[in-house]
Amino acid sequence: MTKKLLIIFCLLVSVGSVFAQNLQLHFDPRGGLHKDFDRNYFTATFEMFKADKWGSTFGFVDVDFNRSKGNIGLAYLEISRDQNLGNLPIRAHVEFNGGIVPANDADYSIPNAYLVGPSYSTTLFGKVNFGTYLVYKYNAFKKVSNDFQWTFTYGVNLCNDKVTLSGFFDLWTENKNRTTGKGGKKWIVLTEPQFWYNVDKNLSFGSEIEISSNFYGNKAYVNPTIAAKWNF
Image 1 (cartoon, one colour):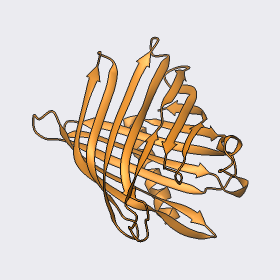
Image 2 (cartoon, helix red, strand yellow; image 1 turned 45 degrees about the vertical axis):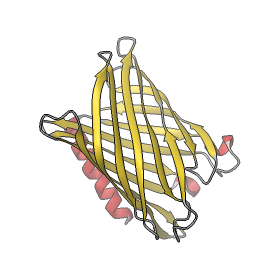
Image 3 (cartoon, helix red, strand yellow; image 1 turned 45 degrees about the horizontal axis):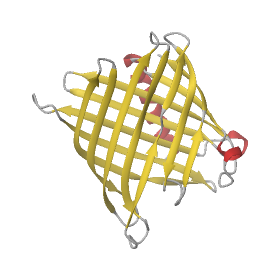
Image 4 (tube, one colour; image 1 turned 120 degrees about the vertical axis):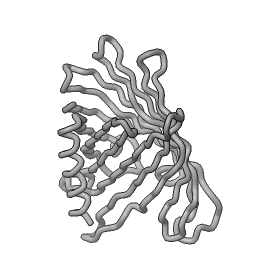
């Protein structure tokens, strides 16, 4: 399973080199900020985006180096497609999420999620890129969870492109008990605003602030990072 995700990661990198995307390295000090996390660690993120005459494709891979001695402890993939629907202002959004968490020398999957529904994107005030979608979400837990998710994304360059603000906001439901499905649903909020200072067109330094509620257990957390980004 780990080898499969690494192959997918390499394929995304090869695609990204053609379509000019970015590689990020984040230092996450959550181990020093919250007693519920046992260590600080680095996360590598590769993002790719490509628009074409039929729509657009977006994907990213996160790799957390959060095991002993900096070994990889999590690999997570998201890939989505927004497909034009003729001349309609909305698009069809399809998405796959999944990953692995190695533990005790065995591979344990992050349950797959499959999302489908309408999406919409536009440019506000001539410079703010904005997108949103409202989708049905199939969570492949031991007891399948049929849910919905609302997401919006944004990005803007300021100060003659020296500063970039970007990020997303997710709100979704899932079964409180992933094994039995009993106990009803819980609401999860996850948002990650990013702030970048662009040294030049390739190199950026900044931070990503992960703000969540019910994402890690039933608590809320704020986890900022210190980051560098290379734009291909």
